[in-house]
Amino acid sequence: MANINRVAYAVSDSSPKGDEEETRSYWTRVGVTFLNRDESETVVLDAIPVNGRLVLQEPKKAEEDES
Figure 1 (cartoon, one colour):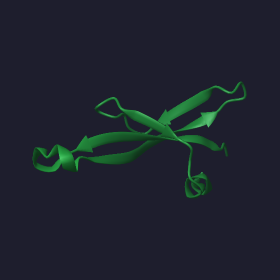
Figure 2 (cartoon, helix red, strand yellow):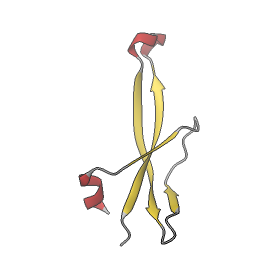
Figure 3 (cartoon, rainbow, N blue to C red):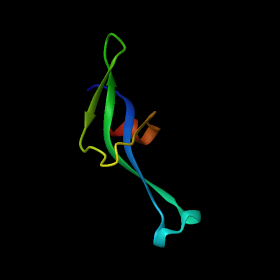
């Protein structure tokens, strides 16, 4: 099985009742990337972020163990 190179998250911001001081970010895992032999990456998405904001991060140890 291939190793996960990065984890893709859709990030959305929400502020309750329009209060900008209490804005929270919600991170939802939507996919992963795999490193190819030529060091390019293949992105596999289970969902597409509605706002177009996608963040790629190194997987945490627990996420690596899931693959």
